[in-house]
Image (tube, rainbow, N blue to C red; front, side, top):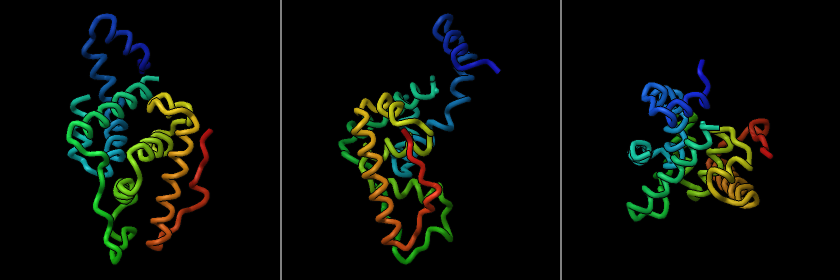
Length: 171
């Protein structure tokens, strides 16, 4: 398999469209998933952002994040909010964890959502998240901590539990 670096050289050096297509195919699922979480499950916003848009993956996440912020500003919205799940409805029975995660992202700020998604979905370290978002390291850590607290509070208030072994701290 040809590395991302080699494909980038081919694209930038000779405008190799086949190499570009390979890069897109290799990373589009990760970027779309990232945008879907940022948009708190609003697939329309995520797809619009993706269309107007790995390490190359970090670079692609940076582009996707900046495009998402521009899309939000363009449509005069400060934050994308999902409708909260109905209290009488138990998401564990009818929604898979992916859908629940996207909906829960509507309870945190855009900045917290970006940092949480990059940390836990994209597996990035705090310094890498700082590079993607442009936030200082301390701010990244604060956004992750506040976002986790908000999500834990919602889960506790709605009788859901978080497995402590799933909470990994990233340095």
